[in-house]
Image (cartoon, rainbow, N blue to C red; front, side, top):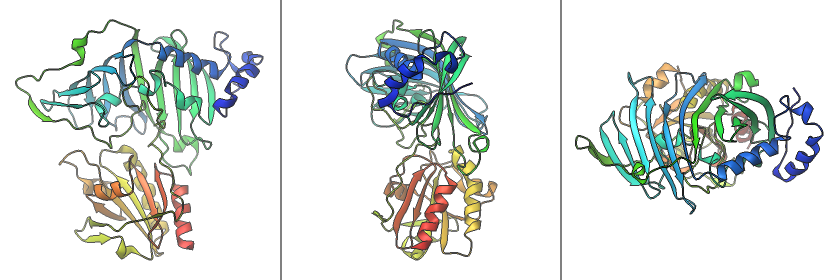
Length: 428
């Protein structure tokens, strides 16, 4: 099959016209649109025209993520307001983990101002302001980046779009568009867009495990959001978006963790949203300009109970791996971090895991370290240092030079980038 790439939104229209004469070569299905740009443009129009939407969805992992990540499933009902930000949400679903014998049921309701979360497993009821953070129960199966007036903005500005043919999903023939959000193709996704109503039916987000390996090895873990039984513009009653606390449930603080992992959908729950960086992998943050950021002093407790300070590490290149026990990509990266530690053994390089952003008192980071046979240093209770370096996704790697200046600050594991930053630090 011949693949077609669009390098920017600015040339998309011109490419659309150029590809008109080549459509029989580019598209195996004669019913397919004449260009990738046309597929996304029609999908954007369909998303913008929605007044309400109902569907069922499931978030799960494939490849090395199969059965290993927290999964979500449930029915979703949405109503879009005329004012940006006025999105009404109702999700009746369940959370699935390997630690739970039975799925944990939940209901999430948001009337666009206040949100409620009813957890049937914990028998808790929480209420709060819907815009104050990220909610895994909401974001896991709500692909807001593909709904509303700003749908597909990130895709239309991607580095490359590749047409992947017609594949059936949810009983619907779908045009498959592979999106490369950066020139290197390290951040990518596959979108399955229905040919009949142009509503998204499936998102596949490969996670980049090790950029130094081939594609088959580097992208062998995928987060999938499957969407089924789509109903466009159903009648949705106001009562769906409000919940009352059952008598036998206890009130709890409504926590919308700022550092919750991004699902394939991303987004924040408004009709007209600001496009976010796609989350096929741990979300990327800009690499700091070498020498532009001076690292502040900090002190953390090590796994052996000793205090480790940044000042005590002066004269060494310091690698910090910010991770949490619930973060499966973090666990996947650990053997490769161990390899980096061993490669620079005997040189002025200090590698540390920094445990942070845990979600409860039951987390046991030392058990994970033992399981992964990691011998590099471990620092605990690292939330304050994570905030210091602006960590917003896990894993995030920070490389600090001998003089305390940040050389690299980047989310996602990229062995080549980390080692390049280390070598830069050693030369200074």
